[in-house]
Amino acid sequence: MKKNEIENEEAVIPLEGGTSYAKVMKETSYFYVHGSQVQQTQFPLQNTFALTVLLIEYEGLQNIWNNGILEYRQRLNQFQESRN
Image 1 (cartoon, rainbow, N blue to C red):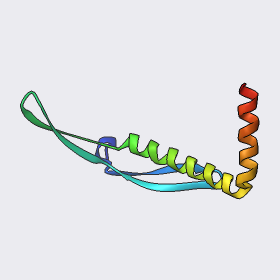
Image 2: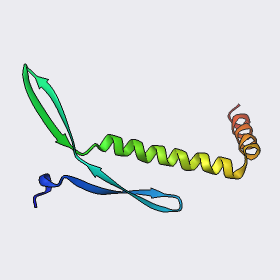
Image 3: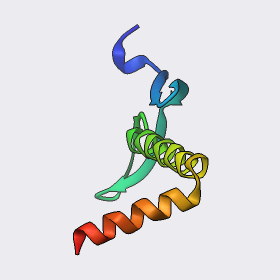
Image 4: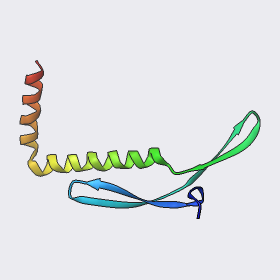
């Protein structure tokens, strides 16, 4: 099978406690160029990146929750004071 014939791939998403796997499928977009309808099929790389960022942000929020909101506020205040 040629590389451009692959319809889906398994993406590896690194997480703090290990890895996560997601099946990524090609998406086809239909649009017009100079009055002619064309299509383009590709993997949604931007969406995969957004998912990775979302998971990283979620892990960050979990750390904040697990470490306690008070400790987080203290660190935030220290950071803000150091910038002044």
